[in-house]
Amino acid sequence: MLDHNQFNLFENVLELKQFDLPDANVSLYNNVFNVEESYTLFTSLFKTIKWRQDAIKFYGKEFNVPRLTAFYGDANKVYSYSGITLQSHFWTSDLIFIKKRIEAITETKFNSCLLNLYRTGQDSNDWHQDNEKELGQNPIIASVSFGQTRPFKLKHLGDTSSQTITIPLVSGSLLLMKGATQHFWKHKIPKTTRKINPRINLTFRVINSL
Image 1 (cartoon, rainbow, N blue to C red):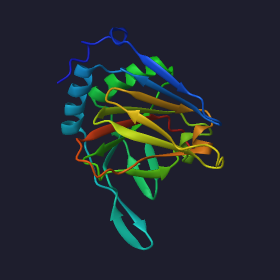
Image 2: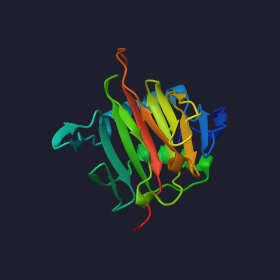
Image 3: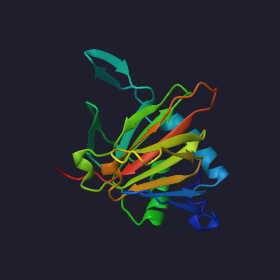
Image 4: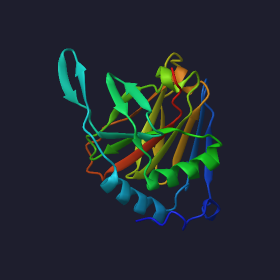
């Protein structure tokens, strides 16, 4: 288990890349968690998180979502997307440790976290926006990755001159999306036929009362 008092944010040398995208505010921080932290957190989250297999209906048929999910946060937080409603489990010590680290960087207090476990290259997340009403007008999404590097793709909804952007999300990284990003851009984690290792992604959010 990770000693949650062992590491100091300032021991890690952050690498910041800001993307010059129209109608968006997207930043990538690498080395938010060092190699030892990332490995230990991935192993612990893989074993201790209450993962679930959700299903969605499409043209009258039910299909398993191609990944496992979990939802944690402050007491009684509820999050709904694609016809799926999730009730929050309370924060674990690992999640509190991660949350404090990214809150120090983003200067934002998060009250919930949607986790995704991509078990193989066939697990994926198709084009979508994080624009549910409970996330507010301009959602702040802080996406942390542990494990296998997967490409994160962004595509503008209306500007056909904008190319699809691909951002490799490496273990220990933080991708921050805020401002009008969710209004104008959609994103996805595509499938791959390559044999790859699992990846855990944590998207920290601020859920508002409706």
